[in-house]
Image (tube, rainbow over all chains, first blue to last red; front, side, top):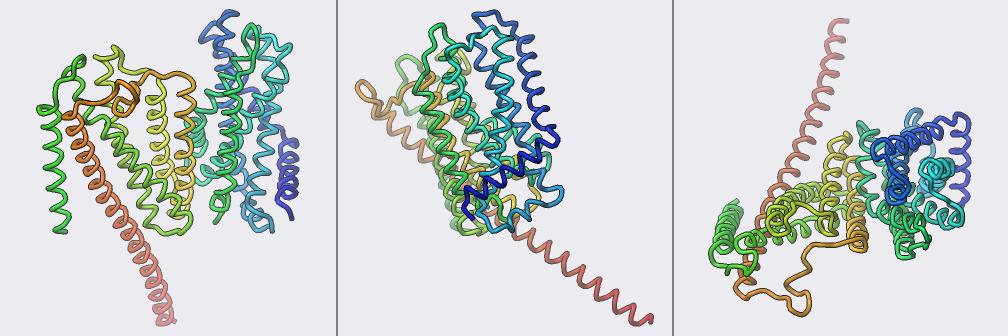
Length: 224
Length: 242
């Protein structure tokens, strides 16, 4: 079976599993919302200040929410040792990782789809005219987040205190992604929005580097 | 054993000589004066750290390819030594920056990069502490080590694009840069001395890790043997009793 088809089937399984309960998605959205609201208490932003702090705040909320949401991705498979069953299937290990990456990407995108409009309302930022460029930035940032996050979720799944360990491993690795996403989002929130191409290219580069690395390393990641 | 003592004594002599040269032989800097002398240990500690972490990257890749335990030992020893050198650099940097820049710390490209690097490799050690199974520990920490190493240039590039304040390379940084020849010689001595200390500690830590692994294996064998013996003994008495 081709890797893409196997990954597609696994993606279907992940989506079915999630949409039966929807607990992961709703918890992620509420958590990110809480972060956004708490920031407004901590900084009390006025309109011009929210242009400056807004992008950073938005991405910190995504990163924190993502590092919590990605935890069950692999640890969920351990309860009934279903990861062993997946490993025994005649598919490449990358298909398993890719399926999970795609599922996490979809969950994260759904969370962002709800959060960004709420954020725009709460912080008085007009999204008119920048929607598609913002979608591009969000997509590139989310790919980077879910690619590294899924791999690290598999790493931390075997450890003690894994809920605490995953953010600890993931957030420092994501610093370049945070800077690039914040800067490119900030370039869109200006009075005259102009997408900063350097940062978009940097984001794409980040995604490519870590996607390639996880493709090369996934055999070792899933071995028993 | 004899060679190790010999090497240790040479390195100890070298580091004292380097300290003396940095404090008394090197000429005074025009604007920064005595504070500048910390540079003779600041730069070498970065060079030592960077060499140690390159060995770690090699060890991580080699472990995944060959699955030999000695590469895992090489990796963890290198991370510990690298973190130690990084800590020295992170302490000497602010000590210099306070009188010269007027601030302890600034979020400049190089400073931020090394700070993130430090956190990344501490997380590596933390991850190892939280994994039980030795083989999982070795494999997963090697994967994390490779990701961390790949991340470092990206962190640097992103901060470089963002903002930078650290002095540009003075030694080969284009026109108007360059060191006094005596300063250059002292610096070279210090680099060699600190590098040798790093190598010495690295080798010792590597040996210790190998011994630890051996010890664990022996313990495991003793345990399995005593379990076996207990089982045999138990069945023997049962036979006698019946």
